[in-house]
Length: 288
Figure 1 (cartoon, one colour):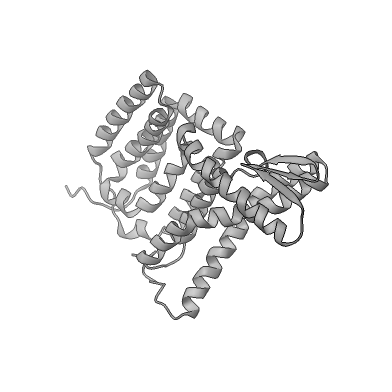
Figure 2: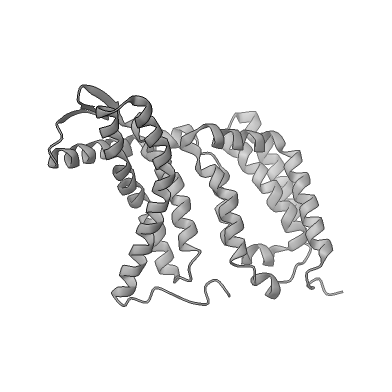
């Protein structure tokens, strides 16, 4: 019997059933992941991961026609490894291992029915699911601290250019007698994580050449800094000359608006490359 065959309704049903069983088996980890994503603004990228993965699968849906499913023993092996990783995470109090094991359980369940070839064809959406992992505090602080310092220096420089009087002490700006700590007003870390997801989605949603995709991903940290500074300047002004409640409201709402701004910047960058007549597109990139 040929293990490679056309897709059948039972395949989808089995994948859904096994994936659901994997989620139920690791429900405490999944509950913890989404609780962190919902409550901690610095981990908001967690909430973007599943919609992004579904979008990347949808625009590659034609690959289902050319890729046949094949049951694989690699799936149970991944499930066993994931279970061991979860136990290790709980035993050593490493949440990253615990969270990653929950994701690998689902991947192993799908791999069992779909097979390695299908998983490789949809590797881009699978990688996007890594955004489900909350960033450990130690890594987050290492990235956030220098970003906050850069943001504070740039904000001071730009505001002084337009004649706004203020002083700076480390990450704190004092404007109109009101101290504004950059970590509270606009933490750059949440921009890095979320905009990294946005840049990844953009890069793999267009038929770009591999080198262009790598360039877009490499530029995402710089884009995060630029967008964060754009967001920071009016936020600081509102904290200095308006009420704290209005400044906080602007800060919270502007975070999602910055995602749209980032997409606009990435689109403009692609337009610039095309205007320079550089070969940036490969129209078979999504189809093949």
